[in-house]
Amino acid sequence: MSITPAPSAAATGGTVACIGVFDGVHLGHRALMARARREADSLGLPLVAVTFDPHPMTVVSEQGAPTSLASVAHRSALLLQAGADEVDVLPFDAAMAATDAADFVRFLLVDRLGVRAVVVGEDFRFGHQARGSVATLADLGERWGFVAIPVPLAGHGEERWSSTLARRLVVEGDLRAAAAVLGRDYRLDGIVVHGDHRGRDLGFPTANLAWPGDPTIPADGVYAGWLIDGNDRMAAAISVGTNPQFGGSERRVEAYAIGRGDLDLYGHEASIEFVERIRGQLTFPGVDALIEQMSSDVSAASTILRDHG
Image (cartoon, rainbow, N blue to C red; front, side, top):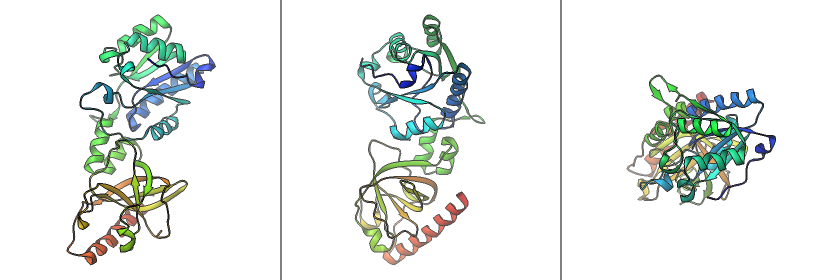
């Protein structure tokens, strides 16, 4: 197993670690981080969020990993916002998957981070074939001088916040409900690339986003949301789909920055935040009908975003 350098926080004489995949950093993850933050403050130690890339299911499951809810960079930023002093991204490979629970704790947590407390969800599993449990972690803590703190899963009513739930809601196009689980609008990061330039010809020039990895893409249709270029956050009407009106087959995400026909974002790193679905993907009897609908979509998006703030 390759051991990555310890975060600089480990040089302070000990840390509190909070461990998880943290896909999307939803409200349940934030509740976990809040408990870890309180523990770190009570001990006067830095809090390190420990996560993994790629998703462990990529390595250990024949079906592979689910689509992601945040890039590694975005996930790290969200964990810092949630209270971490540093984020430790461990490369998950076959060697790590084969590491038994005791070695995982000793080498990656005790030796590298000098953990005094480890905060995890109550269903936390780790080590080879996920044989390690919270009870295992507590036993190892007694051996190596740290306390294991399991945190109950959080949610609203009887429904627990989870990455699985957030992912399903995004795929269904229910972005309002997804935001209620994530605690934020769902975001897609990528690079603006050239498309077919039809939007410009129709009077609605769009930023066509190409993304790395395997992110979760909302259901086909038109959405109100935001196009973000650096510090510029622009109200947008967003199209997701294959553009069947013109016989398209490639699934794309394109955003029209409302009232900003002068933009040239090609090659820029950009983000799209989805607020609410306006309609599903449709075809029209002609271009005039399409333009009329696009105008209506832009108006609807403007109204939604004005109320959304």
